[in-house]
Length: 236
Ligand code: APR
View: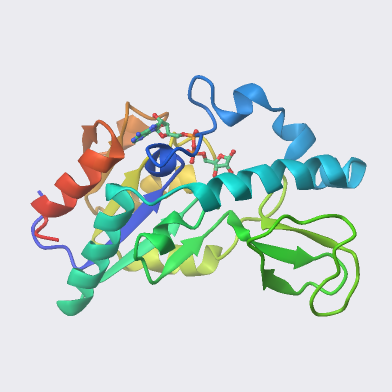
């Protein structure tokens, strides 16, 4: 079915970071079963209680810093390098805000939901690297205003890099989704765009996602096993 794809589009979700110890959102015990996203992950929540929201993301940033990439992250990085050496390209689009893909060796990661390790100034818009906690009084490194927020995409906000993502989808000859429940758009709709173009689609997940029926093929199990095995089948 798969032949020798040259332009692979990979969409990842929280499931690829689960074995690194970072919680997913909708599994049993997931983040949204313990915390109310409407109180912690919306612009309105931040306006209402900035300290609560900053603290929530400070904890997630510390957890992400303490986590290590797993075999899924490393296999995707190796596959991208191998494919590039053959004149192809692996476009890695992630919904995750951790930096485990980068720390696993991926040089090009498109974070459509933003990044925990970046802060954005709500006064001047500057985005800066931020591996430490963000406190409300912390000054923007550019304009000095005490107006920093995590540079992550909250519910009700526009995901990032959509044009770049859709351009990559338009030239892909294989679509792979790994570790995502397929429950949040626009990411959940990407498999439909791939199918409409007639390219093969494969889901690599712990169990069938909400949009599992949209995929031509699937492999179920932990990402640290299914992702390396799938890429090895492609000779990557
Ligand atoms: N290996 C592979 N898949 C796993 C593993 C694992 N070890 N553990 C869990 N999964 C799967 C689950 O079966 C589930 O389908 O990962 C998926 C995680 O789904 P969600 O928790 O919904 O995470 P995700 O799909 O990334 O959520 C998308 O929702 O709240 C927003 O911004 C948030 O980016 C997030 C978006």
